[in-house]
Amino acid sequence: MSMRLALALVLCVTALPAPAQDVVILGEVHDNPAHHAEQAARVAAMGPAAIVFEMLTPQQAARITPDLIADPDAMEKALGWAESGWPDFAMYHPIFSAAPEAAIHGALVPRDAARAALEDGPARIFGEDAAAYGLTEPLPHEEQSAREALQLAAHCDALPTEMLPGMVAVQRLRDATLARAAVRAMAESGGPVAVITGNGHARRDWGVPAFLARVAPDLEVFVLGQTEDDAPLEGGFDQVLSAPAVARPDPCAAFR
Image (tube, rainbow, N blue to C red):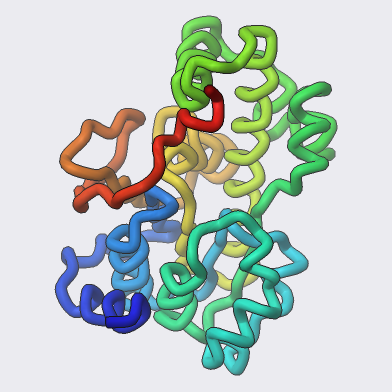
């Protein structure tokens, strides 16, 4: 059975959609097909006016049309997906096809911008709205320490400690960029807006929802987190679903 067919079958059995909201943030583990099937089912159920993707630059998003979505092979080539480093496009395409008329917004932070933020912090890279999004302010000590510990664990305890503040800065930049894209998508489309992103960006305590609460407090936001094998998911979510873990290589092997 092909991956596309398998995902289509999974879409037939899914959790009930979230209540109507302005912004629905749908978290994922990037390489888990069941998580993407759930996202596609939620998108189909909510019928968003716009979708924000962590995986796309604004330039890539601008290439997407309903006709392109109808041809997944052409779409994959047009986006240069195979060279992007993201998992198999067949896992993501059903999300696009679940709402082919939705406006697509890209919120990917390019590598050169991430490198600059690593050295100089997120505010200069983000631009004139940096203060409004809180990027000119240092994090509280406890939050900074917790974030650095997570970055160290995520990189198999292999990063030099002096790199950790920069890694946290890049994460803040990515969170704020996703939030800004959601605000713009809401303003341009009238909503609702779906946001497709990793669980780390979706967490309520310091991810995209925290930025939205700061800059657009009137928006109603729903956050779905998706974990594997019932592992705990920290950060505060309105709903958490679990799917079986996928087989993957040891992520720490490269650090050895």
